[in-house]
Image 1 (cartoon, rainbow, N blue to C red):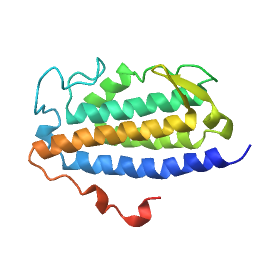
Image 2: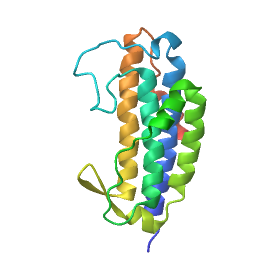
Image 3: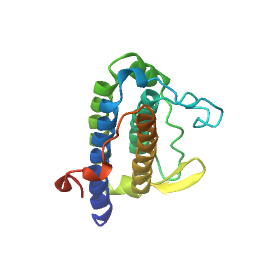
Image 4: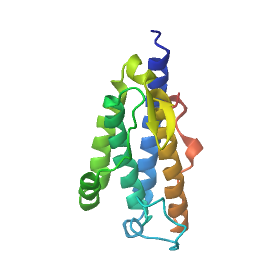
Amino acid sequence: MSQELTAERDRFLVLFDRLAEWTNRWIELTPSDKLDWIPLEQDSVKYGDRLARVTTKNLYIHTIVAETCWADALARCEEGKDIGLPLDPKLSEELDQGDFVERAAELHKRNMEVFGGYSEEQLATNILFIDREWTTVGFLWGIYSHRAFHLGNVDIYLRQSGVEAPDFFAFPAAAMA
């Protein structure tokens, strides 16, 4: 088996880690009184039944919980099996009640180690998620996109709270792939 999927995984790891660092910059800039603030409350401002109260804090918590669930599910998933929804109410509650930024950083580091440990065989495994087939390596990019999507949500909330968000394209050039 070639090392092509491992190289793709390693590319994902670099870019995903940078995206996580940028997410933390947005969170650091969010005034503490705006973490649980909802700028617009209406029925359309939700993400299914799992995230019905959309705040900066719970978007951030939702993101890290989903990534943690997915890291573990992908590590043990067998060919053609469904990885299930990324739900962990206990972890969500733990993050909500504690220092969620510090704990999220610990979980991110742990998730990076899990993602980095996937073998070529695991990366090539076909999995199901919400009635769609993915390879594990393809789903890693889905995880990246999920975080980027919610970073965009956080960016909008930050701007609506009157705070200037970081310039995403001002990243250090050497830090990106």
